Image (tube, rainbow, N blue to C red; front, top):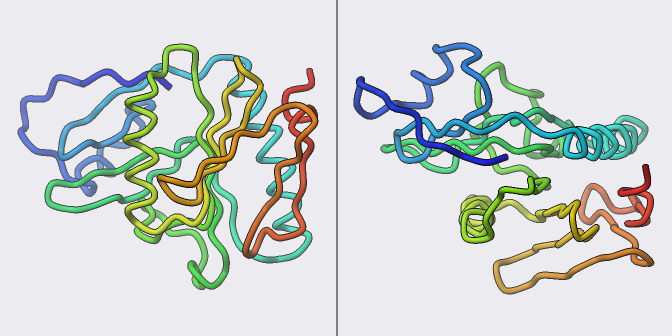
Length: 187
């Protein structure tokens, strides 16, 4: 999703402030400033649903944790607060033993999936990657629908590009999950 700063007159916003605002549309909180995002396009939504069904089904069948979608808010840091909205995220039972919280999540996911929009810029995407890795996210899948590629990050320096003919595979609690990349983008 493309981000655009939102004008505010209240100064620095906290995660609690943002949560209390209710549904103000897609946004993230970047160092106390609300950053609005454009709604997802059709292809983005299609890929997000496909991944949610496949990853979610794997998680449900094995009872290994929780999958959340829809720009789920994840704390990156506090004071000033930074909350990223992930397209899809997975937490093992070990990380969230009590289940999904009512508010934004304060525990690093095992997996974060970001689906690129046509207007996303790589410097902004790299900042998100750095943010997620900084809190201990084990794996990131950056899905590029235009290039029909999935970039798998296990660290900032360890990136693998998967294309048609390759298979996306889960790790850790998601070991055993596989998805041919060509199936992810098949319409």
